[in-house]
Image (cartoon, rainbow, N blue to C red; front, side, top):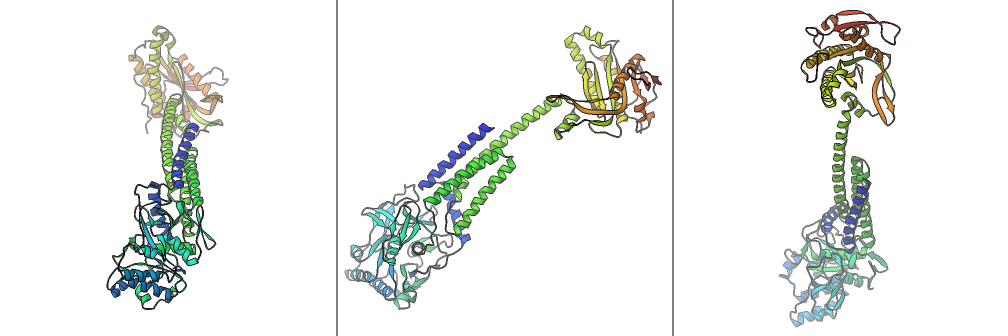
Length: 613
């Protein structure tokens, strides 16, 4: 068992360690597919965030498209929108539009001039190798879409790509990209730098913005916390800004993008299945500026992996070493406690993995439970087989009682009982003639008759003594009809053995049966060494019953019954028939004579085993 447990613990540690290694490296795995919906659930439980104070969205919405006569807006109108944003008091501008194709020289020049009026970042975009299996690594572009040089000369550039999961839900916002032109900042990182007037500083797993450290995930990726459904971030129509109704922009970072129906990119979030891309970027910018993002850095991932190892190894240890039900409940409780902790901490902004410990612990625990059940079933089967074998050496009634109560007869008990001794006459001479093998067969048939008849009358055969046996009635528990059962059993046994002796192979005319039956108090106890014990009865009444068998032999009777047993009968004695004789006899070893009823052999028929009602 200990060896099996050690192997199970090592396998659990290896499985959890393998998953933990992938988690620490940010490799895509099944764990991420489990984690994503759990993260969405925690986001919904935590609920929407208040609208950020420093960020506002200037939306090219349906109203703007209608008033401007279509989309895309002419660059001259886009230039007018930028100037109106500056005039409204915006501190910086982030334009989530790909200005990659030239239009008229005049309009492009107007837009370039407008970009110079306010600190502005414009969007670039990259295409990436789909074969990349790393979910949170420093992204490397395969191709890029760059704004026109005329615009990059007057505005900053940032890559506006968003990292999504397999279902298309945005999870991270990369802050740094490796491009054909070298490392380039992400759109959100460039925007917050323009807003604060200082360049953010990237550390190993942190970005410092205006002196405030913001934790990052692997590869300088910002874990996104979506504020809520669409328009959770304060949104101003571009048409209103152009009309001069734009007081909401004063001192804030304006994020310009498209929200019009069927125009621009959209993402599915837990709050809203159709969220414009500009809102996702605005969320990331707000997370950086106001510290509302999720913390999922190297320290958090190491906590995840530690929890996975502890819960996997600990869970296997619990179900292997404790009683299975207790261990399974405890391990399940620990897993549920961890999941509950991830919900509570998510609300505080800490993104601990709920799926990694579950994925690390559940399979090993499940295998350990299955193996434990198989082991215990085999052990139970072996114990049952052993118990069945042991019951062959103990009377069934006593074996069942000991199985229920292993402490039975730790202390001797006194109780009334009927004791029946039986013996075959003429057996010694006959066994010499039969030889060992035939004698064994002969005795086995005799013993079988004894056990069957005694069991039918609730008697317990305590000992076989060659051609004899000792049976007790009223054990292990006293019964009110003990004497009746014992006398009925004696008659049945005399009748059955007599019939058998007339036909049994090996029997002869000299074979007969002698029975002695007595009733009184006996001591029921365990005798023998602590390591080798036998359950038996003892006391003077046992000796009397044994001597009664001698009395039967001395008087040529088959059955000798003491008056104590006849007096203890709880039913009409007439149902058993009248004895052939009754009288006082001397018992070897006793001073006082005993009144004995004798039934002689060769009777036409023995009375029925069950007394008349």
